[in-house]
Amino acid sequence: MKKMNNLRCFNIILIFSALLITACKQGLDERQQLFLDYAKLEDRYHNTGFYKNLDLYNLNTEPVIYKDSAFNIENFKATVVKNFKIYTEDDHIETDIGYELQFPYQYVLTPQKDGSIHTKLSVFVPETYYKFSLSAKDIGKSILKDSVEVSLLNMTNDSATLLVENKAVRQSYDYTYDVFERKDTSSKKEEYVLPKEPGYGDYLFHRESIERPNYTSVETKDSLTRASFARLEMSLIDENGKTLASEGRINDFRHYLWYRNHDMPYPELLSEYMDIKAKYKELDKDPLHKFHPLYIVNLQANGKINKVEFFLRSQKGKVVEIDLGNVKPEAKPTKAITDETEFLPLANIERESIQKALKTNYLTVPVKLNESEDFILYTSVPYGYNNKNTNMTFEHVKLIGDKKDTVAIDDIFTENDYFDIGNSNSSGNLRAVRFSPKAMKPTKIIGDIDFGITNYYDKEYPINRLPKGLSIAPDGVTLTILKNEPSLEDVSAIYAFTKEDKKHALSTVRIENYDYASENSLLQYVKKPAYIIVRYKKDKDKRVEEKVPFELNIPKSKKE
Image 1 (spheres, rainbow, N blue to C red):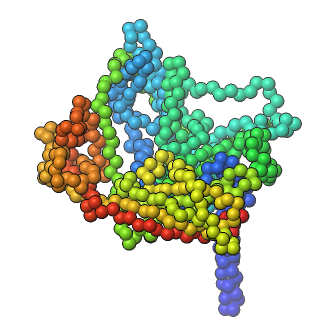
Image 2: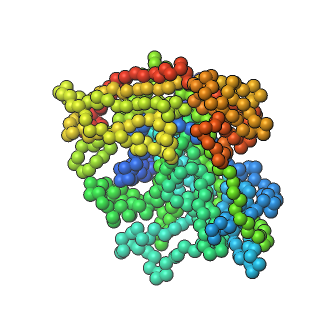
Image 3: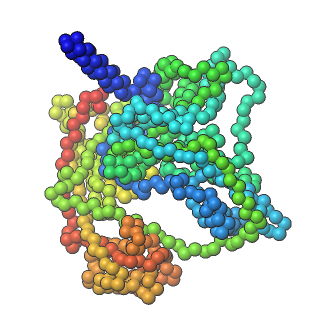
């Protein structure tokens, strides 16, 4: 019995040891850490600020919709045959298939003697697709799908760093070696030849910047027009499962490591790039230095990231050709000009909650070698409709030094653009200023924020029971807003919605020959609305205003 107990104890120790070893393995290995060091070095080179760990309110965008699961090639063919048009405008040819295609495709347009254009459409349909995600708990983890390996190297509040290896292809990096180390001695070098058919070819991405998923790149050469898409798409998701406004950069590791070591305008960085080059050991032993491309991918969000979602389409697939025959070009029809209406959420802030609502912090940015870094102060409030009438002004900014000496900062410059992520700062929910510390080593930043906001409330009305001063015309799409109606004085905005969609306000059509100065206001919608939401100013003409003091400590590691 005693022997059995000893055996059990031994087994428990083994299990515990295995768990401990597994726990120790979590995180980056030595090779992954090298890639992250390189990514941070590139961040300093470009001054992109991917690793500032900003604390910002979430700015959400529409979720990405991938149509792969619902795509049916026979239905698509029928749609194209029915709706396909060729328009001509100022010697420019434009095609319209009446469908938003998300796969690589191309047209071959051949003019005929009778003025028609013979049209052949080819579409690459991927065999399958994969969906997966990585979160902060997955740092160091790698996922391999369809010859693509994705590893999460780092995740901060607002950014993620990935290593992506494309194992579906080998490309030559022989040029990155010193002359005496090069292996490809052939006089004839490989040149890129445009494939005859659409597809992903050997590429995961078709450019170095990331703006949004399903971005289309179109190129035309002679009679061929080709549309390309990235094979791997990425989105940043917040803790509520909503998509964050984001952008990013793709960096070919081997290429740019070589390039930086041969063309470096910043002497202070050269030794660090040389150190990365010396530490990097190529695991692949291809005799001609043809390797699977390694990409460092930096993604940055306007808000706090919970996870990165991936959508990968398969390398394999089939090309479907659709011969549309001879198509007579048409003059492009004149369409009514429409204005999109964005229904932003209310982001009211009452006086007693201003201090809590303001997210105020700072970061430092490099200037020049051997010069003190500049400071950027920033503050933000929740994203919403109120932002357009929100004031956030930094005042009386001072630096406090080691010896309690105080220096007032007079030269302050607006720096809101530093935080632009995919044009997402246009709402104005953030203010930022930049200044020099004047060769001082501060321990604190103090000052005030002059804050002001207008608050609102919404009321919903069925289209057949509108409030006084609003009326819908017999056509069902034209709304009349009576001028000088007292009950409408506090109205800030009017939104119209269909019964089926209560999230997206209807766009309006611009009315020609309309005199806004002498007539009642008119809004003409693209569809018949089922109900109207009227947004009123809250507490008539009362604006919430407050001077909010702030004090930010500067850790020693940040100031030296």
